[in-house]
Amino acid sequence: MQAADPDTLALDPGERAWRLELDPPAEAASAGMAERIGQFATLFLESGDVAGRFAPSGPLAFTLVADDGAEAELEALRAGLAGRLAEAGLVIEARLAAVGDGAEALPDDDGVEHLTEAPTGGDPVEARASALAAELAAFREEMRAIAHGIQTAGAGDDGGLARFREELESVAGSMGQRVDGAAQRIESATDSVCARLEGVPDAARLDAVIERSEAQAALFETAMREALTALQGACAAMREPDAAASDGAAVEAG
Image 1 (spheres, rainbow, N blue to C red):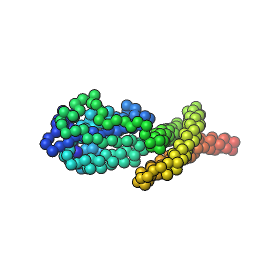
Image 2 (image 1 turned 90 degrees about the horizontal axis):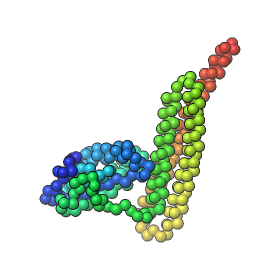
Image 3 (image 1 turned 120 degrees about the vertical axis):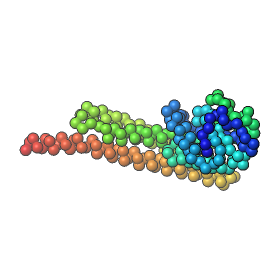
Image 4 (image 1 turned 180 degrees about the horizontal axis):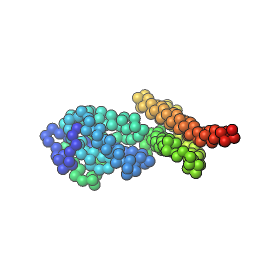
């Protein structure tokens, strides 16, 4: 698709407009993160094979214009965007809705009226999965901060190393609480799926819920492995100054 100015999105004969909205979790909705998500979505849409054009119509929202029969292709494009964001560790809901048949239905400013409503109530399993994904994203950020601190800790700076150890202990305590909370959410989601098993007549729906739960469990396992790797590196970094001090003392004694 081609990026276009919102003022140039008037519909030609045989064309139709759609609205694509991205709904990130609250933890990923900060101004800086939202801007990066929007830039990623723009690049992804430009690389898509669907013939048409698009323009931003609001924060994390786009208006897409394509042939009237391109709905299936646009749906595949939406699913591909959501999948790429999930690969980057961002579980973000992407919604696609048709705008209408008239050019007057197209947005012309950032104050456009939303054409799809946020779900009210919602599936409790999906809500727990979204909350768990947000916890895992925050957990990964903390682990990256630990790894960065290990790499940049100054050699010979006893005060800096002491502060680093204190921060590591603090983050380790927070990590334990997050792991406990994540485990409880996984257990609760599993119990909910089992309780609703007999009340779900659609086997495909049940498979989708189970696959989502398994995916969240896989994310949790990956995060735990990253945490263990970071902590092992931290321990190794703290042992090196102690070993160097012991060698120096031995040389002086000799």
